[in-house]
Length: 397
Image (tube, rainbow, N blue to C red; front, side, top):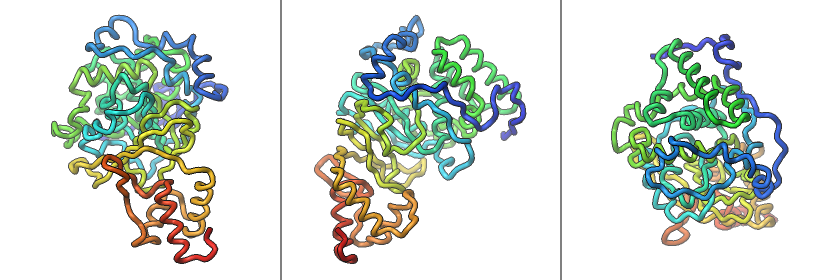
């Protein structure tokens, strides 16, 4: 049943609809080391403690305590643009039915952080990773509604005392009265929680906008696909106490954060050790070329297939090797030469496929275990661009 939320009722909701408000201004952190030094004294209250943490351990090994991501990267929790309708709204619900197939690619990840795109599929990455190796999850997506959706889900994980309470809090309200009561309940839980003052303010200021986005879509486990036990098999944290507890440990520890932006722009992460970048099918729209990975050589995971909730997809990966600065400049120059003026970056891949035609390959197998999409900043794609320009342009280099 659909219902209309009264956007003028600011007294009930505490902020204007569709607007995410920022945390207080925080100085830019120059490196993860600086952040660790600054955050070290303030981390103990953000880590799980007390009986609830013990009850949810299920015998998992404890990870070495370190400053939470939300402390290390606190400056990234910033104001979102207005949550207007956009072309990616339809992807707030998961449409990859077999995420467990990604587990083999995560099994040998180096110690560090996972960067992922999308909503619930990012939780799947965390569930399927080795908790002894994965320090945390950074959800990086160009759609601000992904941040709103996931910040709300993370909040509910932090507030819930059990899986059943989480399911009760995240159930889609059926009418405005239930919606208002739910927000009031969540605000009360925020005030009773041990969240830091900054996070308390952030969640309270943005609760309505986050809730509107989260409740605008059906929970995947209530959808006609979610009722099939094969859909999201192996990551159904709504049904499994151990999977739920694993997500909750990361959430309560402040080690799941969300950022609005391009998955290529990783300089904001201040040289944190990035082990995995899960790009989903971004390569279909944009060239994959992470910048700002520091000394990390992350494994890049990408998804191939027809994206419908009842069609399994295939997962591939390769090790990211950045171009040299000279090669990157040449790559960009060749793109400018080939692509029509004013081609939007989101249309690069589609346009290159049309122009290069028979010269274009969708992907290339690097070795027995690695496969790379050609829609990437890579030496293989640079070679394709060079050959095309040598055929059709003079003085191309």
